[in-house]
Length: 352
Ligand SMILES: *Cc1c(COP(=O)(O)O)cnc(C)c1O
Image 1 (tube, rainbow, N blue to C red):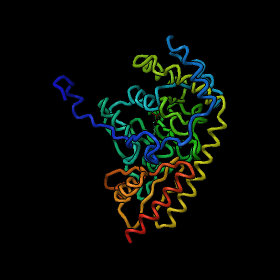
Image 2 (cartoon, rainbow, N blue to C red):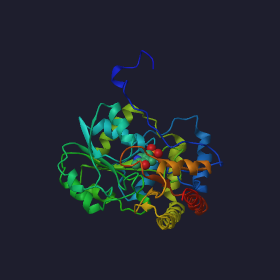
Image 3 (spheres, rainbow, N blue to C red):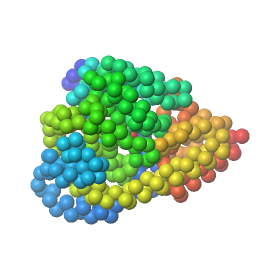
Image 4 (cartoon, protein in one colour):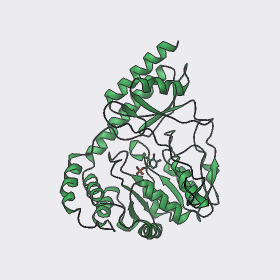
């Protein structure tokens, strides 16, 4: 660290992502990416758009907002896009979090980092012993509220009615619902934005949209919230959504069938993997994400993670008292999940 970094940033923690071994040597079930490539429409639109890279991109993302509007059935003034949903989240913290935010103790860890960066304190509400969120603990929170639905890394989701209760009991606070994983079986709260001016829904093309590498996310909310966010975005990063990302987003929204089919394949493999691991004695939560949260029996989670890595299969382990016995396993293709299941079976055989 140099002498020049401002004191306020000296304790900024580092985000620790899943390891990013490139290439086909590994089965990567540790970063919740899609195992499926982008659609041919998307690839063609990127190739077509690349000829225009000498020109600045449209800072208002007009075509993309209009394609998104048709895709999620929300008016253009209720939508803003960002350079990954991480940017939309970061802008929302910068725009709306005043002093502290309320969030679950076990959740997406990037929230901590944004809060640390902006000097926002965290009020962490412990998940219940079954890892669920008790919505009543979020009533009258006294601050902005943030959580993913379904939550990560548990995969457990709340119903829209339950979230409605949280919205009604926090009328003066922004309630940010991060729907990164909503396309894998949970129900969206986007239809509630007309009714609740304090609701901000954040979504990404990184998981169900097979485009983690292009960096594209969006927010949906009341026109007022969206105008505030766009204002902050334009001050921080006016051209943040580049030409290729805008073109790719338009193509993906215009023909979503391919992605919806892929989500169904992931859900099918999630059900099969859950069932197979339970048959081996694992405890597996009922996930609605493109991953499962699973506790092995007969072997510590960290030892299983290492044994899988030796066989070329990467899964995610989180230290910490409530998560260290568990692994988060992304759902890949049927072939990848069969490899995982076989490897678990063999590893368990060698320990008993
Ligand atoms: C993956 C993930 C994101 C980040 O999405 P990007 O659009 O790739 O920045 C946001 N929130 C949650 C809960 C995630 O799991």
